[in-house]
Length: 314
Picture 1 (tube, one colour):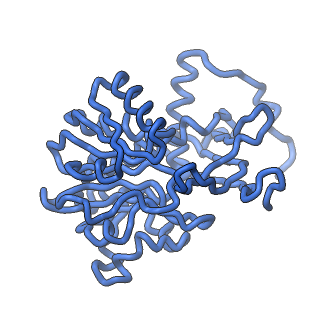
Picture 2 (tube, rainbow, N blue to C red):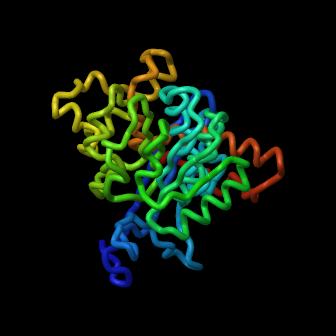
């Protein structure tokens, strides 16, 4: 349903759920928002969510339920958790697939997700000395570079052209709201690792990587193979449909972490991790940890659990 106050923006209700035995909780994440596409001053299009709730705010909540007592344990805002779980997942892909010894990396994006991806990148690759950042708005990328140079003690450098975040960078991370590919895959150096967080998602045919990038890949890893078909993620399926690799050659990150599939096998391999969807179990793991830390520090507000329990069967 298009909102007459905001042409081109539509109401969207999204839910994700999942749990883990280790965390002891089941998580239900919901977002109620207005989603659409905006065109920047330079003509570049970006997906945007509008702060249309009272007070110019957003609505995103994660509810945790106990796997043993059944009761709701907590309700948490999802935004910071959302960006950290995406950044951490991408960093696991970098840890397993990126070449070692890289000291210069490239990054596309200078917003909310880029912050988390930069932090998590440096956790798994602390030897990186310089990160070259490109985003289409000069003021944003320059502010990002200045802020994060000070916070990290590394050289975070704003570059004026997309190629500046690819050439000489064997680790390239895309953390954007882009509708179209961030760079030309012909610029990639052999043996590079590329991360993307945007693929077609059923609501828009957006993508961060072009066909040339996917066709250069010796190894493609995704978060969910099932989601590739569910959302018709043609960017990931492209190399399979063009005969460059078989569908069985596209693996899931979970298989790499469990040791069922190999990560990088040689320095010359070009690899891609497509962080192609979100999973409820990620919210269960991250929120369970956030709840434990919050309880240790006395944060949050308590409400009676009895408010949420009932005497008759649902």
